[in-house]
Length: 179
Ligand SMILES: Cc1cc2nc3c(=O)[nH]c(=O)nc-3n(C[C@H](O)[C@H](O)[C@H](O)COP(=O)(O)O)c2cc1C
Image (cartoon, rainbow, N blue to C red; front, top):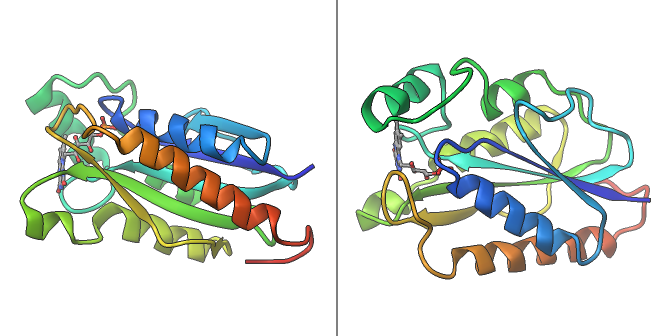
């Protein structure tokens, strides 16, 4: 049975909410597991055909130790291990062959020019490609109204629809096809 896996990093809960909504959309066609990067398997099982990863933008890229420490210091975030998150998981995970993948990030809804840059999702896509995954769809960006959220109205619904569209792409392909 083909499965999907959603792996996220989230400091204030917004990217987690998006991950859960994407999983709901995927679940319309596939069994789905959702895990934070800390809990996710370091060897993804062979029956996982779709991997979705996502997390917040931190200083124009993915979170890293220095930005997580900044979130703790400047915004009162509670992060048990500032040395490990989605980037570190993608640096060490092993993926099955012929796995499809997609990336998302959460970001501020302003200023307009900055919101249009690729930031974290572009790095996530680069790491996914390096692991041999085939990107099934362009990355999606979901907006928050402030550093600690909340999500802009309607973003969780949009994430659900995106997850469903990804599931339909995987379901339409034969089990041994890559991409
Ligand atoms: C240290 C730090 C750096 C950030 N840098 C950016 C940034 O470069 N661009 C941006 O759009 N948002 C930035 N933000 C806001 C995050 O996008 C926002 O906190 C995140 O999307 C919320 O998701 P979360 O609740 O899952 O952590 C930053 C937040 C923190 C804490």
